[in-house]
Amino acid sequence: MFKAILYFTSLIVVASSMVISPKRPNNLATCSFPNGTDTAMHFYNCDGTYAITVQSARALDANNNTLYPIDPRKPITIELKATNNGVQYNDNKNNVTIYEYKNDWVTNQCQWNSVPTFNLLDAIDGCDYAHNCPLTTGALDLRLPLDLSKFSAIINLLASGTPYQLLIEMHNYNQNDQQHEVIACVVAQIRFEETN
Ligand SMILES: *[C@@H]1O[C@H](CO)[C@@H](O)[C@H](O)[C@H]1NC(C)=O
Ligand SMILES: *[C@@H]1O[C@H](CO)[C@@H](O)[C@H](O)[C@H]1NC(C)=O
Ligand SMILES: *[C@@H]1O[C@H](CO)[C@@H](O)[C@H](O)[C@H]1NC(C)=O
Image 1: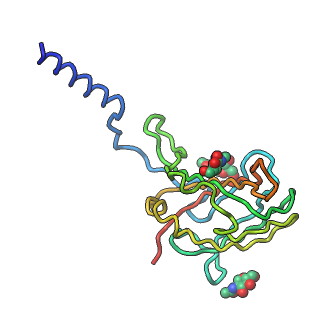
Image 2 (image 1 turned 30 degrees about the horizontal axis):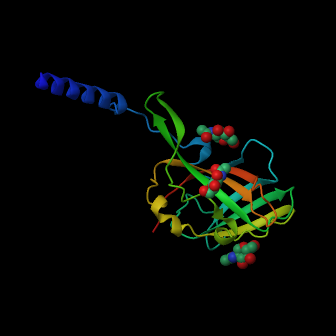
Image 3 (image 1 turned 45 degrees about the horizontal axis):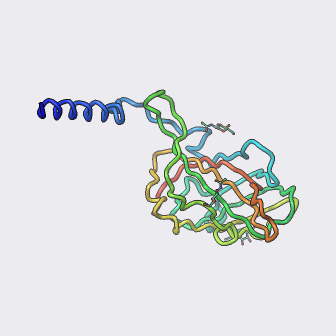
């Protein structure tokens, strides 16, 4: 009797582990870089109406040359042309979500899946990290020095051959603002590559 219970228990365990983590087929096609991201960064403003919209974005190296693919371990400068139709923002905080473009083994289609970032990319202070304060009204022509080495725990998980997407939501943290509403939302699709 005891043996029978043990046997059925082990059957259930084996069966349920098959349901929870079936073997992935190993013939999945790799996903090509979408939106020309093999050769250039692609970005767009999220759907919705936000105070700030971005018209162009480029990563630059120390000699003002366009840098691509991007090595997130090295300090870079982001050149950003944007329009602020809101008020002046003296303080902003940003939530960043990272997605990787991968073949989904259920649908057999390439799709964006979020990468766990353990809340490390929540509430990033734009003034500290992107030196973007204040954001004045009207046309913005920004050069934002960016050093992501603090985020090496996440960056070390990123692979060279995989397309990535950053969803960046900027929140208003002006002194008298209680809502912390989203003032800008941008998706950047990028190829990362470690350089020497
Ligand atoms: C390519 O970019 C457009 C916006 O320019 C976006 O709507 C679309 O979802 C992107 N494609 C992929 C596969 O991410
Ligand atoms: C890069 O461009 C900025 C703005 O045009 C300029 O101030 C800076 O001196 C340039 N740096 C180099 C190394 O050319
Ligand atoms: C952004 O991150 C902060 C800090 O973790 C969190 O409180 C907030 O809910 C996040 N906002 C969104 C829109 O995800």
